[in-house]
Image 1 (cartoon, rainbow, N blue to C red):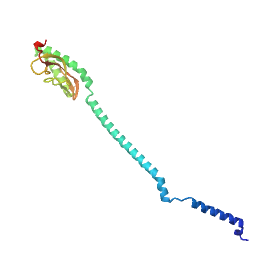
Image 2 (cartoon, one colour):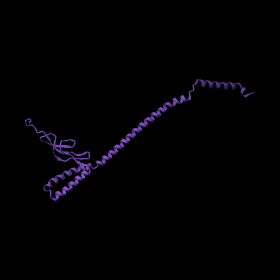
Image 3 (tube, rainbow, N blue to C red):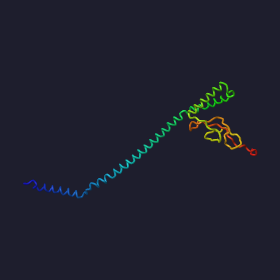
Image 4 (cartoon, rainbow, N blue to C red):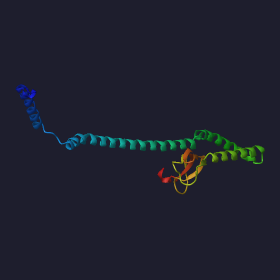
Length: 194
């Protein structure tokens, strides 16, 4: 007898192949390209969006670093340019007192004391100039950014003009060290207004 002649085995094998064929017909098989496109569309878009986001973050961080570098360089320059500001501010009252001594000694300009003090004054002025210190011009119209009005006096002419300087003012490059103390003019009071 032939091995395929067993009727029970042949019926079972036929049933299995009918089931496989029926299963294949009921489940639609997607085309490989369409299945790949639908599965990959969302991840690629997500990856591209994330890459764009990180690129933007990277560019923003690079710009912030560049700004920080520039700000740090500017702060360092200012620190160097104005490193002596506090020392110079504390030196100004000493210079004021020295000038009062010069005025007192100017009664006898041929004395050795006056000649020595004049040499020191010139050295001080040269030192201040080398450090970038300039005297504030205290003539003309009063400027509240540069001048400190300590008093006002009646005077003919335009109001707000500087009449006298009571204490010299100085600036360190473009920064104010001390305003000039000045007396400014005001219009004379009318006699009938009293």
